[in-house]
Length: 319
Image 1 (spheres, rainbow, N blue to C red):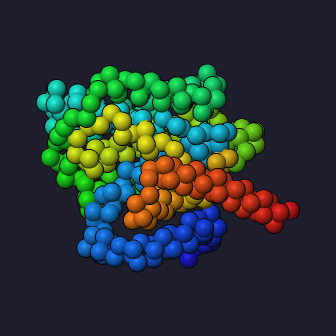
Image 2 (image 1 turned 90 degrees about the vertical axis):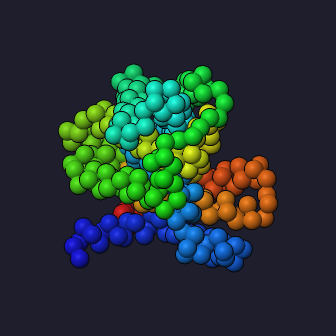
């Protein structure tokens, strides 16, 4: 094994150690509480249920890695917007059902929204959370205008992507990230996330790199929106917003530093699986949605504190 691979493996263990331990604990608890649901024969349906949350967490990660408070809270509404556009405008009104049209259209929508967020934060220099909050509100309003009430169905090929086949768009996301990791852009992204002033001094175009991160997040969120559409098999104007905060909690739980420059999509996806398993445990006890919200908040705070402690310890070892 190469030294680079060993460093990557060590970094993965360090960043996702807590999330991995929690994953094992939650999996054991779920197996005890509901063994039938977690039999190997049911794994396909479980992947389908968890896929939109994993996609939302993966989509949220690139802008967070870019640093400077790059939290995009419009990921959830963008998923809902793609859901509404695909079903209401393209499929039901325009009669377009071909994946050769629907998939590129969804990706272009995601890239366009990501570019708008990127321009607001990097060119206009609005605080990321303020810029993406504005996008959040606009997308929510437009989605409700296009689609005042749930409607369906989805195209047959898209509904077929639920269940085991939902692994295909997830594989596509990780394949795209695998390619990005092998480009000079990835090193630049992590560099500006760690210290954008030092990266700028070294000749990195900080504005361009951060702008592209928002575009990547938009494209990934569009894919997550397609996975959400496949899961529910219809369009619902209110479902996307639910993924906004839990996706950020999943990213933090997965060891991605909210300050930027540390972590990755694997950790974000592990954090998302943890939250999915936690949802399953709490559902088994018939707890209310209010308790779920409390759990999400507690997870986010605990994950941020743990990440801060790890970063402080790492700096201490370097000194």
